[in-house]
Length: 145
Image 1 (cartoon, helix red, strand yellow):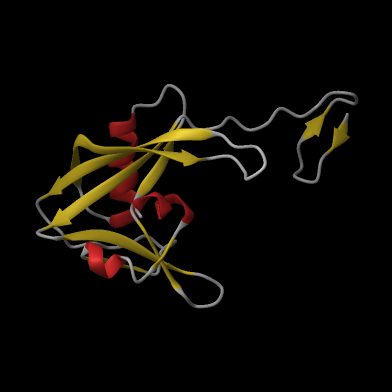
Image 2 (spheres, helix red, strand yellow; image 1 turned 90 degrees about the vertical axis):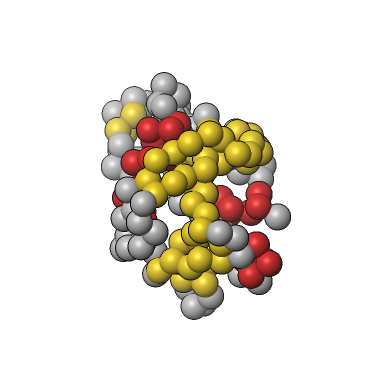
């Protein structure tokens, strides 16, 4: 046995199994008239990076249940997921070893549109499509444009 830098043990002569890759990326689109809800992060340079609430869906998971739970955790809004409004492709791998998965964008509805972003985000913004173009997008949201 030998220890790896991440603390995992493997047998000598055996390769470590890579982490399982997701089969889909589920995004939530909550709209209020012409505006959509975006979560905001600040990078190390202090720039605001926007993204839609999302979750990676692993094999055997229900994408609707996964995005509903992740949306509630990330935004603090109890919402219901409806039909998928768009399907795109996303590279979940690396530039060298590409692994394309489907992106499922679910339309969400909620009684209350008052968000409380989780601690991993610096806040949220309601933006029109024209306004969202001015912001830098997170890697998981670059498929928007």
